[in-house]
Length: 532
Image 1: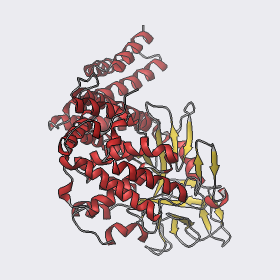
Image 2 (image 1 turned 60 degrees about the vertical axis):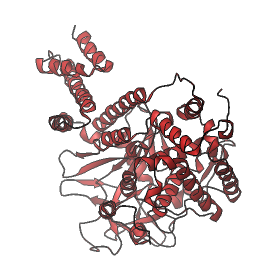
Image 3 (image 1 turned 180 degrees about the vertical axis):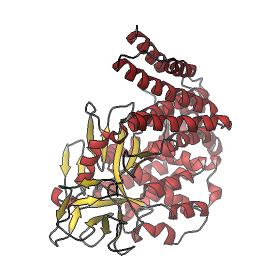
Image 4 (image 1 turned 90 degrees about the vertical axis):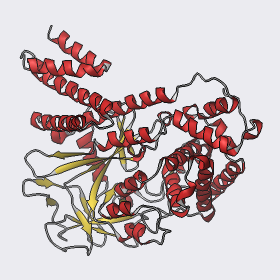
């Protein structure tokens, strides 16, 4: 185990320490290029899938750490995908025509709703109407998805979101569990959290970002303009009010499951994604380092009940309140301390406001008062050490890297260039996994739909290559993976029907070998063996 050191034991000026911490952050892949690469790869996989024989489109958005670029290889961040269903359309009560074909449900919020939640009330207001017409093309039987509440309103049940998503996303041989509002699938390199969402116009509570007094330098005006065009999502509320103590294996539930069935959580994922894209590289470094501190130094106190989202919220409020000129490499550690101090202030007040939704306390039903006191004390100790405790961080060998650089020790750990190559491979693996998931969605199981999806992605990649995009190398690898996937599907179809492998399929396989990806070679060899 790495020997523990303090900054005091290794004599170094603060400016030099900031410089070395920045070097370590770059060595583990927190560079502008790699952040942009992660965003580019995931945004390319925001997909719109047309459902056969209907006018409906299913949409998948990448959100969370991987899509934001706010992760490292050592964090092993999950992949978060939001699956937006077209089957139910909702608007705010009083925000538009009361009874029209423009919406299937009203989003209604009253004193009976949990924090950040609302009800979805059926339109038209007829408790006998349990068959929903979602388009002129098809009628969907929603029996069992609705229930009458004691005020005799007909409400859409949130557990239907989990059931529907499982029937669409999960394959028969795939393992999955419910993780809050999401379904967590384990069929790829890293777990993927899929959350089924309904589109809805922004609620007044979700407009606090635009109405709250702010200094004005951040978020940028362009970001604010784009954010105003975003809708909110309505998702399963998860285990409302429940807390889980992993060390004692105790699950405490505040509300009954029957009550939670009527609740839908308001989510502003797309606005939050825009805000994270508005960060500069120093702010991203500060965020990632603060996430490391949360996981290794604060996590053991309260498990994951102090979440990454609490850290993100503290960061956003800090960036909003502090001037632009402090976010510089030579001031990185101080920026991290500002973020920790914001979090400590929230803990002291026992209230962590949501950045984009008003009247929400993110600590509610997560942390107990005495736990907030513990965290407040621990954060104070970290700040008072001038972040000297980052020397014991083990994630990505951060502490070891820092000690070696401070001591002038030759390191055997991966260099910045080696980490860059690993991140590129990691992103490409995730691209292939996302591609596989999208192909397996049951709405695209016809050959024509699969071909259209693959051809669309291939055309996009070829367009990028023709315009000499800065990610040319990565795009070529992506294109070759598409060729290999297309060739594998067509070869499997030919083998199943006892048809010889066409020259065009063989050519696709050979084109894919230019990537040098061993899996492309193995799939080609597999085809050759199967066809003797």
